[in-house]
Image 1: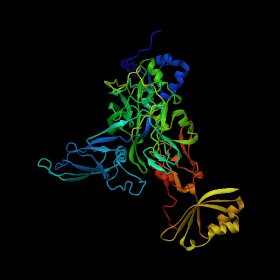
Image 2: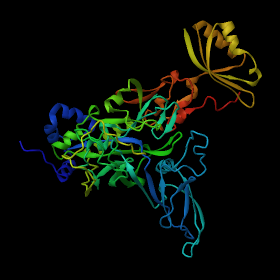
Image 3: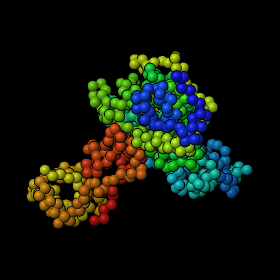
Image 4: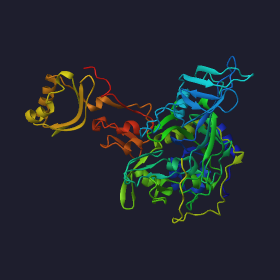
Length: 402
Length: 141
């Protein structure tokens, strides 16, 4: 039998005819176990993935339209949340973690961070009216120095979600070795390893299903915030050189994505403002990526299960810098892990329920012929497969900060 | 043994009466106070777990009602906004009673209000701010 080789065009043609075989990454685990990679590659065309969790490096470009008289906004606020206005006249960037200008922050610790940029984005997508305020120093061509407008997403001439770092390929499991409760971007961590928080969808997570980014790059069409969006570049802190298991799956935070999509098409269910006590505001983003099964290798990678994916347990209290242990996602999902002889309850921050919903939605879109694969025009930076630095347990990786 | 988590609201006229001590002495009930507060207009609120045999429990409840204490189950004053909750599980880190817990392997985050002790730790731990506590917000007695 010839080896399996499929092209994007062939799979898209099958989608057009309603003949493509599409399964979720959860289903693919069982298919590969039962039929092996060769048969799975032959039978399955697309594996859908999903993730839904807080992704701080998110935000939106907004153009609010020229006013009369015109203004070159130099400072701007959306519902009192500062937006970056150092762009052309009425262009802004609203970042997910920006709190309202008068938020008490951590002055009384831990702060609440009830409202911020992520909430503004959610409110826009939910169709709510946003108070926009802009100030300027006035120029001959833009004499206006102050505008206040009530705007909705519909009113805005342009609104694009543009997230410079999303969908982290694996992430730390966080514990607290100190004697005090700490409040982190990984949630509340109780003292003396009272809980272990993790934030990855495991076997459903997009980048864990294509560990070498063979099908991911500029132009890959994805589910983003409930609409169709794109991978537009590799994300900030993209680190393909992270230690990998023999299967190729990184055992620590590794690849990241920059993603872009039309905010006007998105849904509030898939872009939700979040508040992390003592840390700040963020945006929970729903992302789903279809992985084309171009060959047997892609069947192998998408067939990987929670038992085969590991991450490192890190202390977030700055007591011990080295990873305390390595655990599998199967262990994390079981509800407890054992670290240095102590059983610790595990706490997910990424919603597995929503991740499944995304993978299933994307599967339906493809099956109905509403979503076609986008062939990447420029792949993400990666590492050669044969030259991989297979994980050395003694190797110490310093964690990236969120 | 019968046990229930209750919210007691005391109007200002009786806020200085030894009501809980009477529950112990006259009705043979035991209690565990989780929260107690007197508001500026002198109304009081107590969240407690009340235990005893069912007959005594009923009589104790009647005694409180007769003297003007408003008694509500805690569950009535705490709910989850199902629209906002995106089923992550962050709340389960702090919930002391297991009222918020994860059903595995589905990874569904469940809220059983009968097990809730009204500690309110989940309220600010929830990234989506989906937990809504109303029992101590409005006092119209």
